[in-house]
Structure formats: structure tokens, C-alpha cells
Amino acid sequence: MKISVIIPVYNAEEYVSQAVESALQFEDVYEVILIEDKSPDNALEVCRKLEEKHDRVKLYQHPDKGNHGAGASRNLGMEKVTGDFVAFLDADDYYLPNRFDAERELFKNPEVEGVYGAIGVKYYSEKAREQYYPIYKDKLDTVYKKTRPEDVYQGLISLRGTFGLIHLDTLTLRRSSLSKMDRFFETSLRLHQDSEITIRLAYYLKLYTGINDKAIALRGVHENNRITKVDSGKINPAQTRVLLWRELNHWAENEKTVPDHVKLHIRRMLRSFEIAIAPPVKKWAMIGKYLITDYPSIRSGLFNINFRKNLF
Image 1 (cartoon, rainbow, N blue to C red):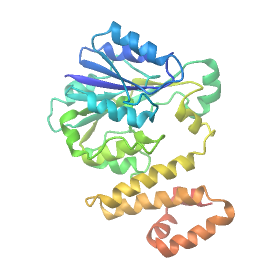
Image 2 (image 1 turned 180 degrees about the horizontal axis):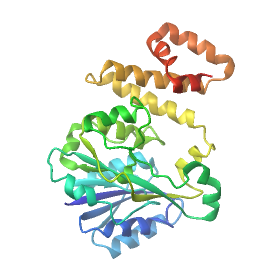
Image 3 (image 1 turned 60 degrees about the vertical axis):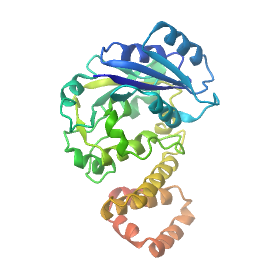
Image 4 (image 1 turned 135 degrees about the horizontal axis):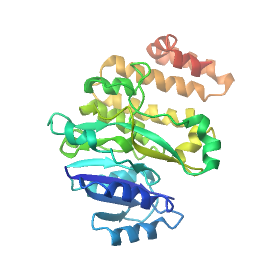
């Protein structure tokens, strides 16, 4: 295997060396591509030293050397890869020694276009553990059971009940299969780009369950995580999810092959989060509006527990 690992780097001078070294432990890793995204700390200099030290490390910045977010940085990384397989890693996370064990076997089958596994949690300080343990605990995040590739995308959009998620750190893709995608990461989303793209990837590609009963990577939890601030309530999660479901709705409406019941579900989720962030006095006005303009999503929503939870 020749695996290209893409690492977007922002405000991660303390952690990026560990991330890079964790990828370089594998002979299968052909190259590590660092995309430095105008960090406010000393991450750029750390990345330069890593490039000087390791032949397999390649450092890039955006053409204007500006800050464009993780999605745009990963897109730039996708343009630079030369390996046969593509994997991702956040700069404050790291791979475990079993990261590619399942991939080596599964990718022998040419029909396998992607493999995903489980990610665990690493608390970088006692303060982080005290603050965020009630949210993350020590649980594994993954698709909880082996699932047929054709069913994965429905699980990711909550059409199959308790399902779990695919974390980018645990996802490996066959590069030749990516031609099925008309685009990669949605740059208009500063958060949830990973959720949005994994749903689309699961729709277009055959993604297989790898190791999902133990961690193959660890997600670093510290006080400056962007997603941690959302999960901890410092940012209203409903607001960010409106943007996520709005983007998915736009994709589904323009993708002719998406089944009608899937389009309806995505629209229902969008409506529920739109209503959730509305002031109480406006909620019923919005329900009335959508009863007129989008009756199917409201009608089906009343039978959906998540919709009712956001509604009331």
C-alpha cells in the first residue's frame, strides 16, 4: 500500500509532531502532507522542521498563505497527494499501531473503496479531562456494528436508528475511486465538514467496516479544540447543524439518484434544527409556514422523536 496522510495544521504547535510521527511509524505511509493554515502560534516553524527532518513529509500553505479552514486545507491536500490511498489525521490527534491492520487485508479486494474504524479519546491535561469527560468519557466513536456498504450512508443520516459515526482519522480511501466525487470538502462549513463529506462518501463509495471494537486512533481533547467548544455548549450546536443540514439538503436536491425518502428525511432534519434555533414566539409561525410550503417534512417530522425534541 502507498498511503498519503493529509494533516491540516492550525494552532497545533504542541501536537503536530506527535501526529506526524504516529503516521510515519508505518512503512505503508508513502507521504505525510501538512497543510499549514496560517496558525497564530509557532506551528509553521514546527512543520518546517518536520519537513527538513523527514523525507516523507511535505509542507504546503494556501497560495495566499491565509487561513481558510480545515475543509479548504484538506482540499488542498487532496490536490497534492500522489499515493494510491488517502487517509486523514487532525494535527492534535494521532494514530495507534493497529491503524492500518484491517486496511491491508480489506483493500486486497478491488471492490473495497474505503475502510473506517473506531477512534478513542486522549485527554491532554487534567483540566481538559475534568471539563470534557462528561461529554466524551472514554468511549469509542465508530459505526457500532459491521454494516453493508450500501447501507452506511442511511445510518449516517440517522435513518437506521442508533448507528454511530465515521471519524476522518479512521477513514482510508482508495484514491482511484474518488473520481466519483464531484467535489470533496465543503468549504462554506467551518464545522461539520467531516460529517457532511462522510455522508456523501458513503453514498458514492463502498465503505467497509474495519476495526470497530478497539481504537485505531486517538482524538486529542484540550481546551482549544474547535469542535470541543461546540460539544461543550460554548457554541450553539443547533446553529452549526442548520448549516450542515442545509448543505446536505442542497446536495440531495441536486443529486437525481438520491431516493425521495432520503431527501424527505434530510429536509425534515433541516426543518427541525431551523425551528430549534428560532425564538419561542417564532416557532409556531415557522411551523405554519412549513405546513404550507413543505408539508411532507413537517407531517413526517411529527412522527420523529428527534424532530419533536427540537420542536418543543
